[in-house]
Amino acid sequence: MTETDTAVVDRIVDGKTAVLLLEAGDAVVDERTMAVESLPEDGRHEGAVFDIEFEDDELRELTYRPSVERERRESAQERFDRLSERLPDE
Image 1 (cartoon, rainbow, N blue to C red):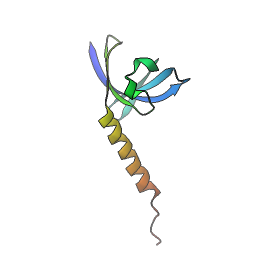
Image 2: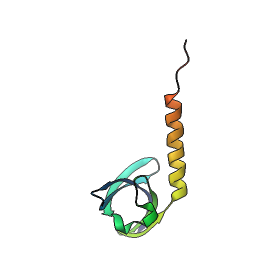
Image 3: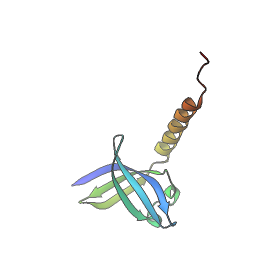
């Protein structure tokens, strides 16, 4: 059985191990670790977003999605900006 999820690099430990959070919709459903060097070179940083495909729980394909990563960063920045606005004096 093949399944495709979204994976986000949550953190890199000791410069060698990437911790990826697997998402389904807006929920984190699993956590996986893998060697940083097994990630595509341009996606070897925290916050990198991938399509990740498993077959029988074995990694089959990993595709870096820079446009999705950029959209997520922009959305998070917009939320932060809205939250940091001063409330009107009333």
